[in-house]
Length: 359
Image (cartoon, rainbow, N blue to C red; front, side, top):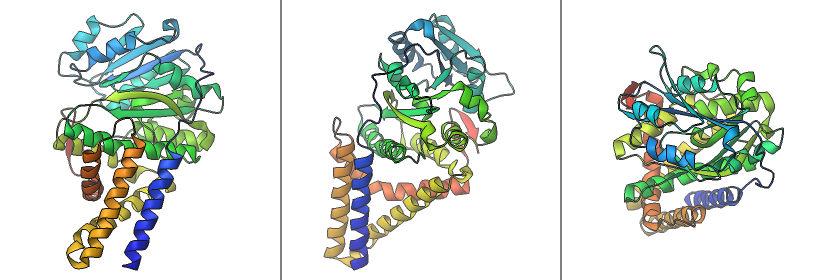
């Protein structure tokens, strides 16, 4: 009992520490380099439903249009999205198509970055929407010449209960991202809201070192930049993009499995350590749930303490959009979810993404 109690105290303190270090915005937007030439690169595949909304959001950007180019890259779409886009491109946008012998997000990003004229590359996904002042906030950290890459918040939208659960679960990832950057040891970033200097991208060889890995275009690029330029080269920006939730459990699992599969290719000792500790912690929490029949009333008290701590933690990091019931469900399911996805990623279960088989 003492060991379990001690574990829960440490668990709660860790949650409090993450909430503290990940709570605040880490940059000021007062010196945004509005004269910088920017290239927004957007790879897409079968996004006909989302492209009109995104194009409209891009048209509303208040950053000087003469300093912005948008490059859409078609990754062999099988719907009518590419045709619609070709007929509705903004004045400062172009459409690039991958050749038949190339496919995948990294190939699409590389194809879009190669002709880009901007000194700063901004990447996002075709199912994302952004506010009118998005670029000003994205570029703010680059007023510091030491910053080579900046990442920001990605929020999962949607009005269903399942989307609320995804929103809550992904909020913890964003919190860990912010906290690690604030502590000076970046371990995560997100390509849906990412920016980097093109010179830094070229200096580290782009995506060449990890082209064979199905995912991780963002994190492996960040890792290479960290190795080349140091921890101070990565920053957090205040800009936020909203992305669509996965429509069902199967699609959600496939996405998370794709994300998790890159961890065994990560050279960062810190990143691997965090993955192992997270897995072991969630395994212990799952064991706590299972042991309730043997622990009796103390077990119920321990589980209640853990669950209430989770709910308070999740509510604290999303005060503007509290999801108490979703937070409760995520708290209960998360240990099993982490274990299943972690093991599946090691086994390299076959799965599909965007109607394409991936290993």
